[in-house]
Image 1 (spheres, helix red, strand yellow):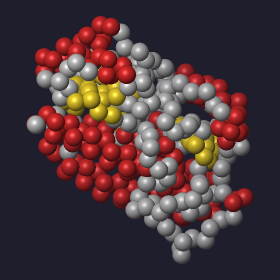
Image 2 (cartoon, rainbow, N blue to C red):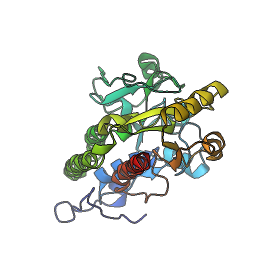
Image 3 (cartoon, helix red, strand yellow):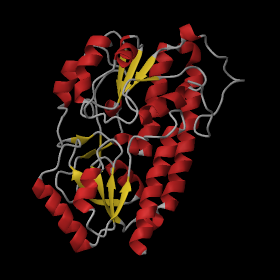
Image 4 (tube, rainbow, N blue to C red):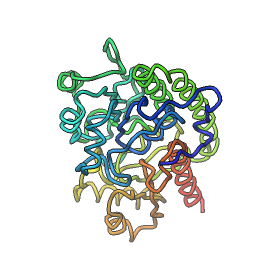
Length: 333
């Protein structure tokens, strides 16, 4: 795939010569936002491989042969969390057991949030906390996967830690460092390039976060309903607040009582916006909320339809900000 230069990942052509293809670690990643962060760190040195088809839900997936091959040949596997992709544990162990592993939710110091378990959300749910770990080498994992799962109590339901932490730009900045550290260990000849790319990406994210905070300054009181509880980290970062989710936690099917609670919320509080997601059938949203006064939009946590490159992460955050801004305008109309 040709590499498209963006403001998010600047070229380093003069400072660091390109390594030959054989010297560059093969990196397999799970979802497009993580691909974008890894592509930012790798820059012109190399390109990661995505092993979950763009547009597919990571909560449940069956690997294609080519995607299984990407895992099998990987020197480094980077994924968000077992709680986001519970089906991935077996393939990582069996196909990439000899590779280095980086599970991003294990990076020390990131902000994590608990899933909100009810149909409607209150302002004090899901308080942020620091993710603490005592690993001697916190960014590297190889054969300790089963012990790790037991120790940290990963959840594969709608309870526990919300794994959609890539929608926090502060988390993404820390992940850039962790990715650069891991690549530098595997490829010391290009370590300076990886670390410089990560630093430039962090600077770009700081600037983007400030821009989006200004854009969303008038949306603090805008309440909206999302398809599933994937946006909490974005809400915390930009001071916006979802009123509820159609599908709790890991995008499982909502119960009739859950749907009725949301319909009451829309009608009683005059909520203007309900968002579906491109990974799921929008007909459910239309069937449930089509007769209400709510604006029916689309909000996407993965960047479906965006160009798969280093610029995708920034474009994803901008896209989410645009949707909430449209909701604010609909509410004030």
